[in-house]
Image 1 (cartoon, rainbow, N blue to C red):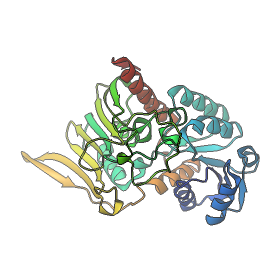
Image 2 (image 1 turned 180 degrees about the vertical axis):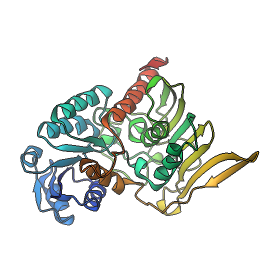
Image 3 (image 1 turned 135 degrees about the horizontal axis):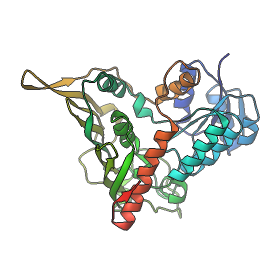
Length: 358
């Protein structure tokens, strides 16, 4: 019998989740949103039979799993509510707005005996899957160091809305653009973080010349109290190291999304360079492996199929396949906790000016 899924949140990301669940053979049977009219409209446009304006009503139905696509502040409480109702949970990133919240989610997962996974969709990109084959085969060797970057020149997602309100989002690009930090740690074998040093910058965060080509409408009188950029460094208990750059508004040439790593026997890079205007149609994707052969430096291009959604659909499909035991889960809640511990430490280090032990 097919797994029955309910979606919480009628926003733009919902169609990726729905497509992924259906790709894996699940039935998407319900849509819930605090805006009942939005839930109804999304349900109708996505051929979902039932809609709710109350999440509790949906959780009382016979669904098996939910996906959560709401502002960050509500990730933890909704996930815990769903787990306590006996549902598997697939939650949008970030896992929550702090590491202690993720610990509460893990406790609820353990008590319920259900799956709790996050939409770290870049792990599901074809480039990442191919790179992991080389890493798991031993071609790369231990990855000593990596550099994670998601840097935008003009990418503030609206002013005064929930993205720029720390109480709702948990932070700016550090928490919004965590994907490459996660992907780097995934390639490195998910080591346990030890120390973090970082700094945040708020230059340009109120300058509308730096608004991105996508996002949400500006809200007059709303709050904008998050950073515009952050840089930092992480050491792990394994001796591995990771540097990072995450920004919505920073003086770079063009938007760059990348992980570069240096292994003992090979290095590599997964990268997407967006167009100068943020247009995906002019993006350049690169996936490369760097090796030594017969005393010569050889750069190998890894060819993969195009994936315009950057793994979002396959990530959602993996959630269903993991529940059914058909595929290994691409992530788990403990990995989400380690990521949030680093993010918390970045903000703490930025405030204190000192390294932070995890």
